[in-house]
Amino acid sequence: MKPLVVASNMFNEIHQLQGDDWLSNWYVNMCNIADMGILIVDTGSTDGTIEYFKGKQNVTVVVDDIILREGYGPARNHLRDMSKKHYPDAQWVVYLDGDERINPSDYHRFRFMKDYLDDRFDIIAFPRKNMVQKGRLKTKRDIHVNPDYQARMSRLYAPIKYVNRLHESVEGARGIFADIKNPKIEHYHRSTNKEKRDYIGKVCVHLWQKQNEENPGSLPKHHKQHIYEELLDKEGLVHN
Image (cartoon, rainbow, N blue to C red; front, side, top):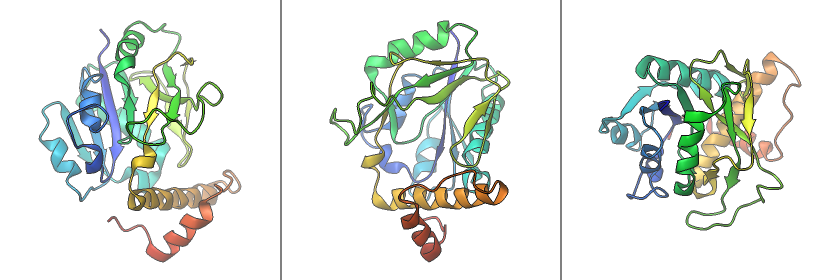
């Protein structure tokens, strides 16, 4: 067995931690794949998220607003560093957000891949299903047409590095294993409340601005960016 850490950046995710089944509770879902432990780097939640995780024996909580300060690429690298620090015997790390799940039908394949994947590959990319609503099978797009591969699982001690504040990419991997038969990430971002979605939108605008200051013209604008630019100008980035 090659032990794995589930690592996640979180902010005000208590609504994703309710109930006792895999779909309603992110923690319940992750316990089925995290055979080494769960690492949470929390931005500074005010809704009880930090307190919820601090009561779990297999969870390590670090409070650090690294996404806002440095961006998503550095935040991935930080998750890797903290995983090595707190779980030095782990061999894999997978990054899954609070609104993402691995379906129980994929648990066996997930474990098989981490234990037996060819050493030529440092990263596993999962097709991501953008779900319309929790409890329903409907997706926004057919993953066989648009698999939306997410390079989320990596060997913890491989010499890889994530770059960019926004739309992070990875450098240094020997190989990325992407296959439509890989376990799927079920993405339930549409079940997140509007306040949370607006906050994430403002963070992305903030990071877009920072990245384009450093490398002008490196990122095109999102088609809804003007909405969040107006919100950012009006409200700022104060945590709610």
